[in-house]
Amino acid sequence: MAGKRRHRLAQRRKAIGLSQECLAVSLGVDRSTVVRWERADTDPQPWHRPRLAAALRLSIEDLADLLADVGQPPDPPDERLAYVLRHPRRVDLVAVAHLRERVGVLDQQYDRLPSTRLLAEAGQLHGQAIFLRQHASAGAVHRELTAAVAESATLMGQLVWDASQRRDHKASAAYFDQAISAAREIRDVVTEANALLRKSYLSLYGTKQPTSSLVLTTNAATVSSNDSHVIAGLAHLHRAEAHAMLGQSRACSDALVTAEEHIDAVNADDPAAALFCPSHFTRLVDSCWLFLNKPAEAISALENARHLIANRSKSTAVVLGNLALASILQRDIDAATTYLHEAIDVIERTRAGGGLNLTFGAARQLRPWRDQPGVQDVNDRLLTLMSQ
Image (cartoon, rainbow, N blue to C red; front, side, top):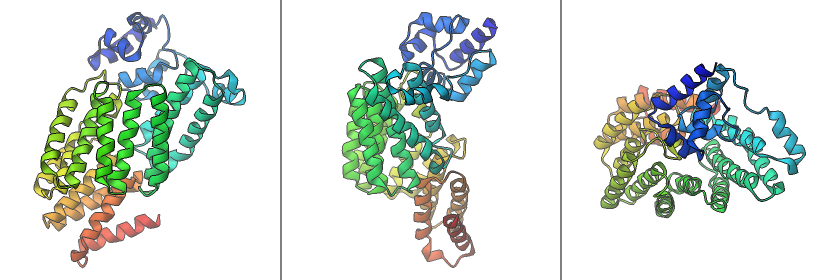
């Protein structure tokens, strides 16, 4: 049994190019701890498992399955969390780890499931984190609960905005501000920068205020520059997009160069590695080309991004919506309607707010061709979608 454990954990670690030392550093433990896990001398503690899963590029469920396959005990049951909610002064690291793990599971589901399906549970977990933090004494437990508040508030900001089809900017901003404040309290610069970046999307895609977004993306890039190439790279990518919205081609290009430098430096040890997707750079480059009125370049980048996105996620709907817009700019209506049908297929499953807004925006651009049967079919599907 121990040999099987050693084989599975060590095999996964080696498969993604991590040494025992690198894994230990990313988790904040001694190398000897990793050795004991792989020998099955000890089990990874509950509060280590979310970070261990991220480091091994596994979902929480996959890590649990891996451990369960070798006879390891399951994660702490909900009964422990229920107990400390009844007796909040007895909250401990095990209960907090379980709460954070549940937030992490919802976060992983965000890009695949409708936000309306996740919102109730996420709100409940966020409220529980706030409640328990109010009763926890200073120390490790209070710090972990503050981290839980920062993580759950960031997720709530995303869910509320997406569920409202990117209309409820005020409520989302309040959650992101709460996340930023909690992250600063424990000096977690990566979580702070991520919340700043998420907040910048409200200005970039919601209120259409690229100047405000520039302030937030620049701040996010500065905060994360020494700690996460993933967050810094994404921040510079969205800074480039804001410059493109303002028609600032040179500043956009400079930001893209800086973003690419950070993305090229990303490795498995990055604390935000789970947020990285190979399609990020090409998706944002295409958006910049669209804002700079260069549809041919946009289509080339978008098709590349489309191939990099393996699943039919919310991000796929955004790519397809932008492909439709670029095709309309080139007056290729058949291609535009094809992309819109594909986007609607994804939106029907995920209810992606960003993809939905882009799709309706592209449909409005098709009004000069509204008498064409293909365009009428798209409009019929959109009407059906809104009635569901």
